[in-house]
Length: 92
Image (cartoon, rainbow, N blue to C red; front, side, top):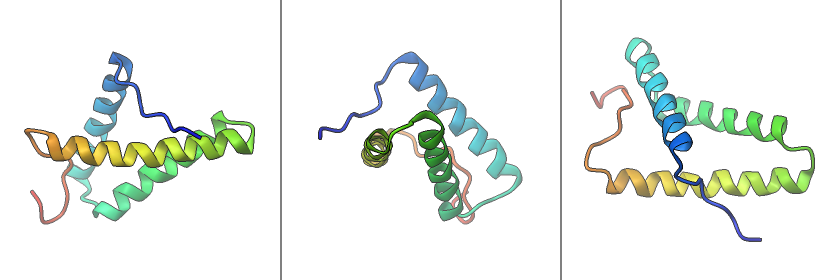
């Protein structure tokens, strides 16, 4: 089964930017370790998959989409001119 990457439409960029801004604001006031942030994002992805997908086949496919987009995000950050806007303990 082929997997699908997040399309880079304006809506996707705005949502990704908004999520990044919320994380930045929250972690500025309440620093979190990277494993906590990643865990929360994974939980949110899982909750979205369950609430938006009725069949196990579609849920499995969406898990693959999430997994592939973790790699896409890592690649994008490696290529980025500026670093992450996340506020992490020991990295500010």
